Structures are given as C-alpha cells and as structure tokens.
Image (cartoon, rainbow, N blue to C red; front, top):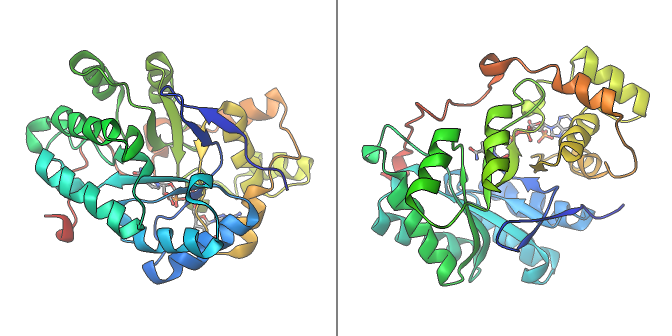
Length: 285
Ligand SMILES: NC(=O)c1ccc[n+]([C@@H]2O[C@H](COP(=O)([O-])OP(=O)(O)OC[C@H]3O[C@@H](n4cnc5c(N)ncnc54)[C@H](OP(=O)(O)O)[C@@H]3O)[C@@H](O)[C@H]2O)c1
C-alpha cells in the first residue's frame, strides 16, 4: 500500500494529505486505534484538547515504535482557553499529555466570534509565540469563516498554515476553500465522509461501484483529487485499512463534478455553524 501524498504548507513544513482522525474515540481505545493506523501506513494523526484523548495519541505513536519525526501530529486549543495566559497553559498541557516536546500543527479549534469580545486575534498572536519557540512547527485555525481569515490578514503578520473546516459532498464549503486559497492557507476537510451520512447516496454508490471501490473510498478519493487534506476517523480496523487504500485508482473529472454537485449549501452542514458556535466544555472553563 502506497504512502499518502505530501502537501507543502506555506511555512515550508510538509503534511501527509491523508491522516487519521480521532474525534469521538474513547481515551482508553485511542492508543490501539492510533497504533493500528500507523501500522497500516498513516503518518498523520489529528487530535484536539476537546477530544480528551491526546494521551492515547502519544501512547499509540510510542507503541508503534516510530521515530517522533516520522509522524505529523495536530492538536487544537480548547474553546475555554482563548485568553493568552490560558492558551499558554493549555498548550503546555497538550505537550505533556502527548508526551512530546513539539506538535507539528496547533490550531485554534473554533473562532468563537460571540465570546471573548470576538477577539480571536489575541489568541492567534499567542499561537505565534508557540511557533516562534519551535514547540508548534506550524500553526493554524479551524472553523474560520472568510471574514475571520480576512481579519487575521489585516491585523497580524503570520498567515495560518491551515484552516480545518467541515467539508464533504453534502457541504462542499467552496466559499471557505476559495478564501483559504487566496490567503495561501491549506484546506483541511473535517468529517470527510459526513460521519457516514453520504455513503448511501446513489450518486456516490454508482461512482464507487464503477471504480470497484467502497463509497467511503470514492469520497476520500474525491477529497484527495480536489487537493484538500483529510483524516477520516475509524475504530474499525477494516475501515482504517480501506480508508488508506485510495491511491491505486482515480476518479474522472465528470465523477469529481458529479460528487461536488451533491452540495446542499448551508443545509448540508452536519456540525455547528462557526458564526454562532459558543460551546465551552465544563472541563475547559
Ligand atoms: N476541527 C473540528 O472542529 C473538527 C470537527 C469534527 C471532526 N474533526 C476531525 O476530523 C476527523 C474526521 O471527522 P469525523 O470523525 O467527524 O467523521 P468522519 O471521519 O467523516 O466519519 C467517521 C464515522 O464514519 C465511520 N466510518 C469510517 N470509515 C468508514 C468506512 N470506510 N465505511 C463506513 N463507515 C466508516 C466511522 O465509524 P467506525 O469508527 O465504526 O469506522 C465513524 O462513525 C475527526 O476524527 C477529527 O479528527 C475536526
């Protein structure tokens, strides 16, 4: 099985285009799932403070026996920690939970424009400190809308390396993808298979059947050919394996277009709207 293609970020660091997501993986199952993914060939793991499983991610990487430098690790700042001092403490905690002295990418998980006086700019400047001292090789954002990206560009100097947003066939999120491109920001697509909701779609099953692949493989291949970075989540070894086996077939331009045509605009969102989302977990107050 081939390794995933690599994308160069705007700061020169390199990220595998296909990784492994860990949202909703129980902390006690995380090390096993991550080790399984690494044994299959994944070299990019996506976690977050909010998932409560950073410790298992670090453990899974150590269990796989791989050098730290061989695995690209992303984590994200929890919503309760946007104030600069809280963000500094929370980032220290991320490194100690993972058991590493750096992360490859650290993101502001949500912009929270209705909290903290809407000041995600101060939070972003705090992440710049982590990049300067080398403890975050790259820094970026998640769930940032076009106007949030424009505001960072107007008020700060460091351009986010990545913006991780919801993208799948029912919510292609072209506006954010386009603004990411304008700013030179890599697009990461979360919930790439819409947590399974797109897998029974007749357009997708037809294209998957024609390719002799599963619906999940066809959708992941669609993302890869569009150039986005993806990290499907699974605790099922068979899925973990098949989600990585997408480099021995190609979709035609017509097939890519047909899948993109399933977009339902805002109605296709499965997750929260970043303009109004203001959830702060109890353990991050
Ligand atoms: N930045 C953010 O705000 C944000 C938000 C959401 C997600 N994320 C990141 O993006 C990652 C992926 O998103 P996600 O976890 O929400 O959803 P997803 O990857 O689109 O879907 C995961 C779901 O699909 C199932 N699945 C996986 N592979 C399958 C296959 N080949 N066939 C059938 N079912 C399959 C999984 O079940 P099994 O486990 O049983 O296989 C799981 O229920 C997350 O894990 C997280 O790292 C980030």
